[in-house]
Amino acid sequence: IEHVFLDVRDRTALHKVMRDVDVVFHAAAMKHVIVSERNPAEAIATNVGGTQNVIDACVANDVERMILISTDKAVNPTSVMGTTKLLAERLVSAMCNSKSKGNTKFGVVRFGNVLYSQGSVLEIWEKQMARGEQITVTNADMTRFFMSIPQSVQLIFTAVPLMNNGEIFILKMSSCTIETLAEAYLEISGKQADDRNTIGVREGEKFHEELLFAEETGSLLENDTFFVRMPLRFQNGNTTGLEEAGFVKSDRTSFTSDDAKYLLDREQVKGILNQYLQE
Image (cartoon, rainbow, N blue to C red; front, side, top):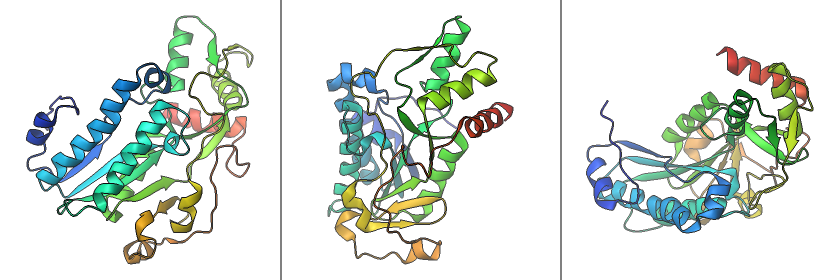
């Protein structure tokens, strides 16, 4: 496999690298809330302008499918990062409604926090512990959705063959409080549950995350594992392919990280972390 490194803000380079490409997974972005809050122009240039560049390069090169990797922070955003990812979602949706979209099919997946991914809280805690420091916690009562790397891959590869015209695929993720995650992590690391330092909520951060907008609930399908938000301008569109794949109409009206149905306790989180470490 050839590895090519380039900047998604470089339109010329993108158009060249897209030649003879079948599927594009667009994951290039400024993903960190604080970095984006302090560098909003750069976040806009990368997450919004870069996404438009990728879309244009896909269409120009007749790429078969492009899928945008989005985030729960794009739903009712309070941060620059979340807002730019929402705009990226809207760019995909706009292209699906454009006469200039060509033959390319577009879709979106919304991620939660991916465990042990680069820049994730668990990676930060590991580095802090390696330096002999206490782990830092923003607020014990905050809640977050989380998913494993295998789950994120499963979500993407479920979406690719089913996406057609801007559908958004969402994993029914578990969630937990920051306190639960910190206590579980400290326990499996052989530390005391109070071996942590509370630093307070940082700029742009939400107390609880959401995976659905209110206006999306009327155009929602689901199965046991995923939600699919149909394109908003095609609420009565063709859902045959998704229905054949086992999706049915959903009456879900919200999906928030503080929903008691999905909140895990410390033992459950410990089990997930231990399994991940064993793998």
